[in-house]
Image (cartoon, rainbow, N blue to C red; front, side, top):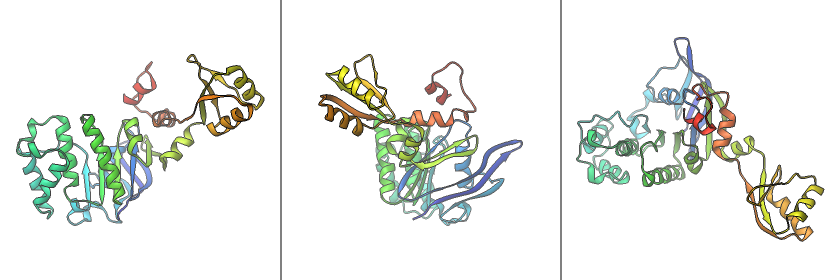
Length: 312
Protein backbone atom coordinates (compact mmCIF):
# COMPACT_ATOMS: atom_id res chain seq x y z
CA UNK A 1 0.00 0.00 0.00
CA UNK A 2 0.93 3.67 -0.35
CA UNK A 3 2.00 6.28 2.17
CA UNK A 4 2.06 10.08 2.08
CA UNK A 5 5.53 11.43 2.84
CA UNK A 6 6.21 15.09 3.57
CA UNK A 7 9.84 16.15 3.97
CA UNK A 8 11.05 19.64 4.90
CA UNK A 9 7.96 21.01 3.15
CA UNK A 10 7.85 24.81 3.04
CA UNK A 11 5.41 27.23 1.44
CA UNK A 12 5.77 30.99 1.49
CA UNK A 13 3.30 33.60 0.26
CA UNK A 14 5.37 36.77 0.10
CA UNK A 15 6.62 37.42 3.61
CA UNK A 16 4.24 34.86 5.15
CA UNK A 17 5.46 31.32 5.72
CA UNK A 18 2.29 29.21 5.71
CA UNK A 19 4.12 25.88 5.97
CA UNK A 20 7.42 25.76 7.80
CA UNK A 21 9.77 22.82 7.05
CA UNK A 22 7.20 20.15 7.77
CA UNK A 23 8.26 16.51 7.96
CA UNK A 24 5.81 13.68 8.67
CA UNK A 25 4.41 10.52 7.09
CA UNK A 26 0.86 9.19 6.84
CA UNK A 27 0.95 5.40 6.92
CA UNK A 28 -1.49 2.81 5.53
CA UNK A 29 -3.87 0.90 7.76
CA UNK A 30 -4.85 3.71 10.11
CA UNK A 31 -6.85 6.93 10.11
CA UNK A 32 -4.58 9.92 10.69
CA UNK A 33 -6.28 13.01 12.10
CA UNK A 34 -4.80 16.26 10.77
CA UNK A 35 -5.35 18.98 13.37
CA UNK A 36 -4.43 22.58 14.00
CA UNK A 37 -5.96 26.02 14.60
CA UNK A 38 -7.24 28.14 11.72
CA UNK A 39 -4.25 29.38 9.77
CA UNK A 40 -2.02 26.51 10.94
CA UNK A 41 -1.28 25.36 7.38
CA UNK A 42 -3.40 22.19 7.14
CA UNK A 43 -5.25 23.06 3.93
CA UNK A 44 -2.08 24.46 2.35
CA UNK A 45 -0.23 21.24 3.15
CA UNK A 46 -2.99 19.14 1.60
CA UNK A 47 -2.94 21.31 -1.53
CA UNK A 48 0.83 20.87 -1.77
CA UNK A 49 0.49 17.08 -1.47
CA UNK A 50 -2.09 17.14 -4.28
CA UNK A 51 0.01 19.35 -6.54
CA UNK A 52 -2.44 22.25 -6.42
CA UNK A 53 0.28 24.57 -5.13
CA UNK A 54 4.04 24.53 -5.64
CA UNK A 55 6.21 24.29 -2.54
CA UNK A 56 8.83 26.90 -1.83
CA UNK A 57 11.03 24.09 -0.57
CA UNK A 58 10.95 20.42 0.40
CA UNK A 59 8.88 17.60 -1.05
CA UNK A 60 5.47 15.97 -0.73
CA UNK A 61 5.08 12.54 -2.32
CA UNK A 62 2.52 9.76 -2.53
CA UNK A 63 4.05 6.32 -2.77
CA UNK A 64 7.37 7.99 -3.52
CA UNK A 65 6.01 10.07 -6.43
CA UNK A 66 4.77 13.60 -6.79
CA UNK A 67 1.03 13.70 -7.43
CA UNK A 68 1.56 15.32 -10.85
CA UNK A 69 3.49 12.24 -12.01
CA UNK A 70 0.77 9.74 -11.14
CA UNK A 71 -1.02 8.04 -14.03
CA UNK A 72 -4.81 8.18 -13.68
CA UNK A 73 -4.45 9.88 -10.27
CA UNK A 74 -8.04 9.21 -9.12
CA UNK A 75 -7.15 5.52 -9.08
CA UNK A 76 -4.33 6.26 -6.62
CA UNK A 77 -5.60 9.21 -4.57
CA UNK A 78 -9.11 10.31 -3.70
CA UNK A 79 -9.49 13.76 -2.17
CA UNK A 80 -12.15 16.14 -0.93
CA UNK A 81 -10.95 19.68 -0.31
CA UNK A 82 -13.95 21.80 -1.33
CA UNK A 83 -17.46 20.36 -1.61
CA UNK A 84 -18.57 23.53 -3.43
CA UNK A 85 -16.17 22.99 -6.34
CA UNK A 86 -18.49 20.80 -8.44
CA UNK A 87 -20.24 22.61 -11.31
CA UNK A 88 -23.75 23.44 -10.13
CA UNK A 89 -25.44 22.96 -13.51
CA UNK A 90 -24.34 19.35 -13.83
CA UNK A 91 -26.23 16.47 -12.30
CA UNK A 92 -24.46 14.43 -9.65
CA UNK A 93 -24.22 11.45 -12.01
CA UNK A 94 -22.82 13.52 -14.90
CA UNK A 95 -20.26 15.11 -12.58
CA UNK A 96 -18.99 11.66 -11.58
CA UNK A 97 -19.17 10.35 -15.17
CA UNK A 98 -16.90 13.19 -16.32
CA UNK A 99 -14.39 12.27 -13.62
CA UNK A 100 -14.55 8.57 -14.44
CA UNK A 101 -14.08 9.19 -18.19
CA UNK A 102 -10.98 11.33 -17.61
CA UNK A 103 -9.36 8.70 -15.39
CA UNK A 104 -10.22 5.48 -17.19
CA UNK A 105 -12.72 4.36 -14.55
CA UNK A 106 -15.66 2.16 -15.64
CA UNK A 107 -19.01 3.97 -15.70
CA UNK A 108 -20.50 1.27 -13.48
CA UNK A 109 -18.38 2.61 -10.64
CA UNK A 110 -20.42 5.84 -10.67
CA UNK A 111 -23.59 4.08 -9.54
CA UNK A 112 -21.63 2.18 -6.88
CA UNK A 113 -20.29 5.32 -5.22
CA UNK A 114 -23.63 7.12 -5.50
CA UNK A 115 -25.16 4.19 -3.63
CA UNK A 116 -22.41 4.19 -1.02
CA UNK A 117 -22.81 7.92 -0.45
CA UNK A 118 -26.61 7.66 -0.15
CA UNK A 119 -27.23 9.70 -3.30
CA UNK A 120 -28.74 7.12 -5.64
CA UNK A 121 -32.18 8.76 -5.52
CA UNK A 122 -30.81 12.21 -6.44
CA UNK A 123 -28.16 11.25 -8.98
CA UNK A 124 -30.19 12.90 -11.76
CA UNK A 125 -30.65 16.21 -9.96
CA UNK A 126 -28.53 19.29 -10.59
CA UNK A 127 -25.87 19.94 -8.01
CA UNK A 128 -26.99 23.55 -7.48
CA UNK A 129 -30.16 22.18 -5.84
CA UNK A 130 -28.14 20.19 -3.30
CA UNK A 131 -27.81 21.13 0.37
CA UNK A 132 -24.34 21.48 1.87
CA UNK A 133 -24.59 17.97 3.30
CA UNK A 134 -25.56 16.50 -0.09
CA UNK A 135 -22.66 18.30 -1.77
CA UNK A 136 -20.38 16.91 0.91
CA UNK A 137 -21.61 13.38 0.20
CA UNK A 138 -21.03 13.95 -3.52
CA UNK A 139 -17.49 15.13 -2.85
CA UNK A 140 -16.82 12.00 -0.82
CA UNK A 141 -18.34 9.87 -3.61
CA UNK A 142 -15.92 11.53 -6.05
CA UNK A 143 -13.01 10.80 -3.72
CA UNK A 144 -13.97 7.11 -3.65
CA UNK A 145 -14.62 6.86 -7.40
CA UNK A 146 -11.26 5.35 -8.36
CA UNK A 147 -11.18 2.93 -5.40
CA UNK A 148 -7.96 4.66 -4.34
CA UNK A 149 -5.22 3.49 -1.99
CA UNK A 150 -4.94 6.98 -0.48
CA UNK A 151 -7.90 9.08 0.73
CA UNK A 152 -7.54 12.71 1.84
CA UNK A 153 -10.55 14.52 3.29
CA UNK A 154 -10.73 18.11 4.52
CA UNK A 155 -13.55 18.61 7.05
CA UNK A 156 -15.61 15.66 5.73
CA UNK A 157 -18.33 16.02 8.41
CA UNK A 158 -19.10 19.62 7.44
CA UNK A 159 -22.84 19.98 6.77
CA UNK A 160 -23.68 16.33 7.43
CA UNK A 161 -26.62 15.33 9.62
CA UNK A 162 -26.11 12.84 12.50
CA UNK A 163 -26.69 9.85 10.22
CA UNK A 164 -24.16 11.23 7.77
CA UNK A 165 -21.59 11.79 10.50
CA UNK A 166 -21.92 8.17 11.63
CA UNK A 167 -21.63 7.04 8.00
CA UNK A 168 -18.42 8.97 7.28
CA UNK A 169 -16.92 7.85 10.60
CA UNK A 170 -17.51 4.18 9.80
CA UNK A 171 -16.37 4.69 6.21
CA UNK A 172 -12.99 6.05 7.32
CA UNK A 173 -12.49 3.20 9.75
CA UNK A 174 -13.34 0.67 7.05
CA UNK A 175 -10.94 2.22 4.57
CA UNK A 176 -8.15 1.99 7.14
CA UNK A 177 -9.01 -1.64 7.95
CA UNK A 178 -8.65 -2.39 4.24
CA UNK A 179 -5.08 -1.13 4.45
CA UNK A 180 -5.59 2.24 2.79
CA UNK A 181 -3.90 5.48 3.80
CA UNK A 182 -6.45 7.90 5.27
CA UNK A 183 -5.71 11.55 6.16
CA UNK A 184 -8.57 13.59 7.63
CA UNK A 185 -8.48 17.26 8.56
CA UNK A 186 -11.08 18.38 11.09
CA UNK A 187 -11.89 21.03 13.68
CA UNK A 188 -14.33 18.73 15.49
CA UNK A 189 -12.31 17.29 18.36
CA UNK A 190 -14.95 14.94 19.71
CA UNK A 191 -15.59 13.58 16.24
CA UNK A 192 -11.88 13.17 15.50
CA UNK A 193 -11.39 11.22 18.73
CA UNK A 194 -14.04 8.75 17.54
CA UNK A 195 -12.21 7.70 14.38
CA UNK A 196 -8.52 8.70 14.42
CA UNK A 197 -5.79 6.22 15.34
CA UNK A 198 -2.93 8.68 14.85
CA UNK A 199 -2.59 12.47 15.02
CA UNK A 200 -0.53 15.04 13.17
CA UNK A 201 -0.94 18.48 14.75
CA UNK A 202 0.24 21.76 13.21
CA UNK A 203 0.63 25.24 14.66
CA UNK A 204 1.60 28.28 12.60
CA UNK A 205 2.88 26.04 9.83
CA UNK A 206 5.08 23.94 12.10
CA UNK A 207 4.76 20.36 13.29
CA UNK A 208 3.65 20.22 16.94
CA UNK A 209 2.88 16.53 17.33
CA UNK A 210 3.04 13.29 15.34
CA UNK A 211 1.82 10.54 17.67
CA UNK A 212 -0.67 7.71 18.07
CA UNK A 213 -3.90 9.00 19.62
CA UNK A 214 -3.35 7.29 22.99
CA UNK A 215 0.23 8.54 23.29
CA UNK A 216 -0.90 12.07 22.46
CA UNK A 217 -3.60 12.02 25.16
CA UNK A 218 -1.25 10.49 27.72
CA UNK A 219 1.45 13.06 26.94
CA UNK A 220 -0.87 16.03 27.53
CA UNK A 221 -2.64 14.95 30.72
CA UNK A 222 -2.15 13.40 34.13
CA UNK A 223 -4.00 10.32 35.39
CA UNK A 224 -7.04 11.02 37.52
CA UNK A 225 -9.54 8.81 39.33
CA UNK A 226 -13.17 9.50 40.23
CA UNK A 227 -14.90 7.33 42.84
CA UNK A 228 -17.86 7.06 45.16
CA UNK A 229 -18.19 5.28 48.49
CA UNK A 230 -20.55 4.97 51.45
CA UNK A 231 -17.65 5.55 53.90
CA UNK A 232 -16.14 8.85 52.84
CA UNK A 233 -14.24 9.59 56.06
CA UNK A 234 -12.46 6.22 56.10
CA UNK A 235 -11.65 6.51 52.42
CA UNK A 236 -10.25 10.02 52.80
CA UNK A 237 -8.07 9.02 55.75
CA UNK A 238 -6.76 5.89 53.99
CA UNK A 239 -5.84 7.83 50.86
CA UNK A 240 -4.11 10.59 52.84
CA UNK A 241 -2.04 7.97 54.68
CA UNK A 242 -0.88 6.72 51.28
CA UNK A 243 0.22 10.21 50.25
CA UNK A 244 -2.78 11.11 48.07
CA UNK A 245 -4.85 14.29 48.19
CA UNK A 246 -8.50 13.32 47.65
CA UNK A 247 -11.01 16.08 46.87
CA UNK A 248 -14.75 15.66 47.39
CA UNK A 249 -16.95 17.15 44.68
CA UNK A 250 -20.37 18.72 45.17
CA UNK A 251 -22.10 15.52 44.04
CA UNK A 252 -20.38 13.49 46.78
CA UNK A 253 -17.89 11.80 44.48
CA UNK A 254 -14.17 11.95 45.18
CA UNK A 255 -11.40 12.76 42.71
CA UNK A 256 -7.75 11.84 43.15
CA UNK A 257 -5.07 13.29 40.88
CA UNK A 258 -1.95 11.48 39.65
CA UNK A 259 -3.15 7.93 40.24
CA UNK A 260 -4.90 5.06 38.44
CA UNK A 261 -8.09 3.30 39.46
CA UNK A 262 -6.21 0.05 40.05
CA UNK A 263 -4.13 1.59 42.84
CA UNK A 264 -7.15 3.20 44.53
CA UNK A 265 -9.09 -0.05 44.28
CA UNK A 266 -6.25 -1.93 45.97
CA UNK A 267 -6.15 0.56 48.87
CA UNK A 268 -9.93 0.39 49.36
CA UNK A 269 -9.93 -3.42 49.25
CA UNK A 270 -7.14 -3.64 51.83
CA UNK A 271 -9.02 -1.29 54.17
CA UNK A 272 -12.36 -3.04 53.57
CA UNK A 273 -13.96 0.16 52.27
CA UNK A 274 -16.95 -0.42 49.94
CA UNK A 275 -16.63 1.25 46.54
CA UNK A 276 -19.78 2.06 44.59
CA UNK A 277 -18.05 3.66 41.61
CA UNK A 278 -14.43 3.72 40.46
CA UNK A 279 -13.13 4.89 37.10
CA UNK A 280 -10.11 6.41 35.40
CA UNK A 281 -10.78 9.83 33.90
CA UNK A 282 -9.02 10.36 30.59
CA UNK A 283 -7.92 13.67 29.15
CA UNK A 284 -10.19 14.46 26.22
CA UNK A 285 -8.76 15.19 22.80
CA UNK A 286 -10.18 18.72 23.00
CA UNK A 287 -8.41 19.37 26.32
CA UNK A 288 -5.12 17.93 25.06
CA UNK A 289 -5.34 19.80 21.76
CA UNK A 290 -6.12 23.16 23.37
CA UNK A 291 -3.29 22.67 25.85
CA UNK A 292 -0.83 22.00 23.02
CA UNK A 293 -1.99 24.74 20.65
CA UNK A 294 -2.78 27.52 23.16
CA UNK A 295 0.19 29.60 21.96
CA UNK A 296 -0.19 28.64 18.30
CA UNK A 297 -3.67 30.05 17.57
CA UNK A 298 -3.48 32.91 15.11
CA UNK A 299 -7.17 33.88 15.40
CA UNK A 300 -8.52 33.82 18.96
CA UNK A 301 -11.41 35.56 20.66
CA UNK A 302 -10.94 37.36 23.96
CA UNK A 303 -12.87 36.57 27.10
CA UNK A 304 -14.37 33.37 25.65
CA UNK A 305 -14.24 29.78 26.76
CA UNK A 306 -11.48 27.47 25.42
CA UNK A 307 -14.03 25.89 23.09
CA UNK A 308 -14.98 29.29 21.69
CA UNK A 309 -11.33 30.14 21.11
CA UNK A 310 -10.79 26.89 19.23
CA UNK A 311 -13.67 27.63 16.87
CA UNK A 312 -12.71 31.24 16.22
